[in-house]
Image 1: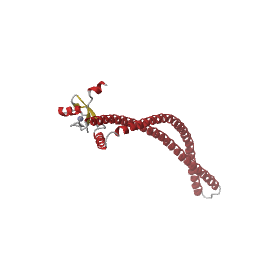
Image 2 (image 1 turned 135 degrees about the vertical axis):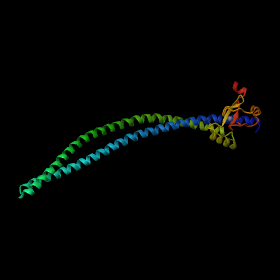
Image 3 (image 1 turned 60 degrees about the vertical axis):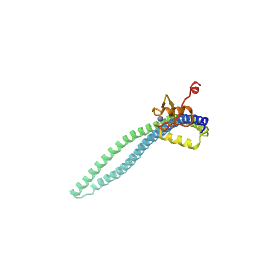
Image 4 (image 1 turned 90 degrees about the vertical axis):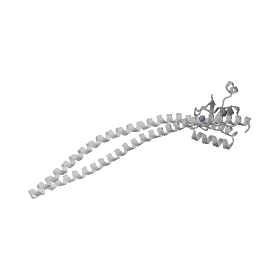
Length: 245
Ligand SMILES: [Zn+2]
């Protein structure tokens, strides 16, 4: 590379580094927003699951109630039949046995009636909770739709910015050869995204280590591509004419 070519390439690399950091920043912002959207979806899912489980509880309660009602009918029949039989019984022993049957059945019946009464109360409480859950879910859906809309707008904006950055990046990389670009890419991966750094006052601003004076001189001359001997990042220098401009 000639002197002019080296300067141009280093300038392009410096620009590329700036663009890539900008893209990295926007990408991180985008990831945060996507996480936010996922959080909204989770919030709704949780509310929906809670409501579903209340509804399932209600179905189970209704089934238990119907079962109790059926048993109650059977027990009531049994009592009536046993009481009828009492009229035809001849022996005292048999009479006592049927009487015992009746009293047991009556006890079962009372218990069932208690149970049914309790289940009516339970079902009212549950119905209230379900209504509340439905209201919450509807409110949450509305609220989250609004917030999600906001975030999606921000996302669209970011994506458009990234597309613009990308085309700026393409224009910049067009002036750099594949070997240099590969080297840049590898350095970015190994050095926390920073492959090109400024050298100032004799040190590399990437790792803050001193650069040997001869190397610093060469860097100043701009005859060849200089990398930091400590962190291997590609170095550039701001010349007086640039800082003044
Ligand atoms: Zn360094």
